[in-house]
Image 1: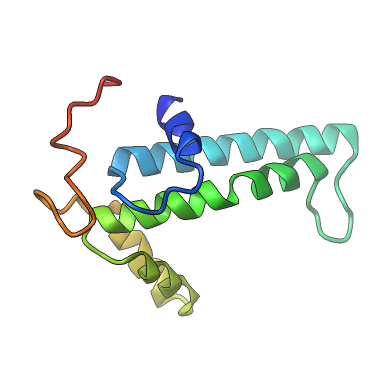
Image 2 (image 1 turned 180 degrees about the horizontal axis):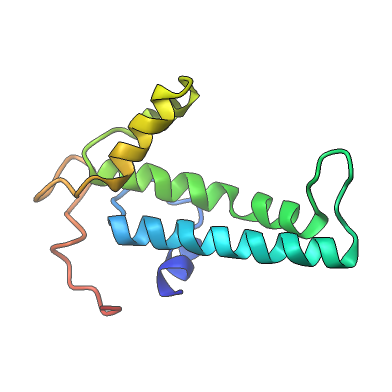
Length: 126
């Protein structure tokens, strides 16, 4: 939960680096929150029959859009890639797979042009 809150505190911070654990814990919490909110949308009847999206899950998705992009850019910085590499996802099939490979990859050792390695900095949450 702390990793999720840390990403939200850095709401629109696109510089620096994000560890693999920070990124994937944020993704995991987003998946869980989206599933819960979709279930609640179904219970209270706020699901649009045309789109299949509910009001609560839609608002949540909009609220975490910028932090999701920001943490993705910081994660790409951690593996030594520019944030613009995020656009590779628009290449059908191959782009999404390549982005996944980059996101699961280990940090670039030492400092790089985007900052110090977050693994080298002691983390009080561990």
